[in-house]
Image 1 (cartoon, rainbow, N blue to C red):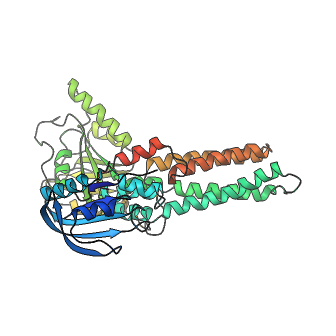
Image 2 (cartoon, helix red, strand yellow):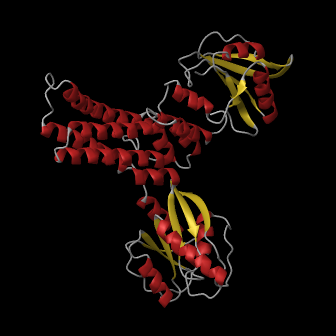
Image 3 (cartoon, rainbow, N blue to C red):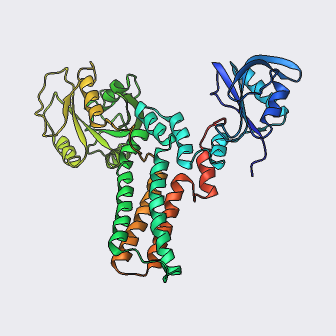
Length: 443
């Protein structure tokens, strides 16, 4: 049972045009009456008034009442729209707290929306994803999830499973009255659910890239211009650049938005034979970066022919998703380009060819159709769906092995539990608390 009334500043810290104080709970209107001069009687209607604290007017503001259940949290909510200064927002919040409100915990407004049945857990998580989105595609994917697209897909799968499971259990309890499902019908139903789960899981890699970005490792031998290329792509001097080989000793990470695609760049140490212990450690980390990267930007020096170390690197990334970036296009060219599917010539010094590189990357990772399908962007969702798929496969194996119906029904029950972890039907309090703890206060 939720009995207390909470309040928080719902806008970001710092100066701005508007600051919003959000109050939610059964005493929201009573608290507003104590600190706001205008009467809030009609839901979803703004009125002009003054906020007072300890008998002193602190600001003119707009107030709006959202009556339960037609509010974001499902409770009575009052929002006060004052001027967006740090001090005035803090005073307005203090006024609400002194009038009987409790300070909201991180994500508590969205948590209440979930607990009150206004949204499912996947929609609640989408609120945080929208706030933290770095690209337009990430916003679209989160907005689809917020609209309930993923929740509806889960609900459809759950309904089919419940139909099958209910019939199986009925044949066990009322064998004289309920006919068993024909083998072909049961097999087709379970196979259909498996196909739906597989289709959702097929979106997980794209979803991760949409949400988190493409992990791109800049790989090359020493002094081919990896750090210069990083700086050119970022448009700022982030990495130290010198003519001395081995300047980069560690993996430097930086992110940039390229044509709507978030690119997480990993500038690595030049891979070569070295007796320097620190440089060797950096080289080891470079090799590890290759393994975890979605995309390899193999940087070669176009002003010289391939060396033995270049050849070794080409072999190392041969089976990776690679763009061969031939740097130093501003110098006379001596390099015969190796046979990669994607090759582009650039000059990190002058900027020549960078536009071609950006177009190539954006084209490789363009994600269309986000408006029409559910996309898995959460590792938590992915793992839950993998568990659900495993239980469906187990049920199909049991069916093919002519095992008793109660064993099949047991697998279906476990599958339903795994699905419930996605939309919150069966999720634990610990997971719920962990999800909302990552939210901002006021959200």
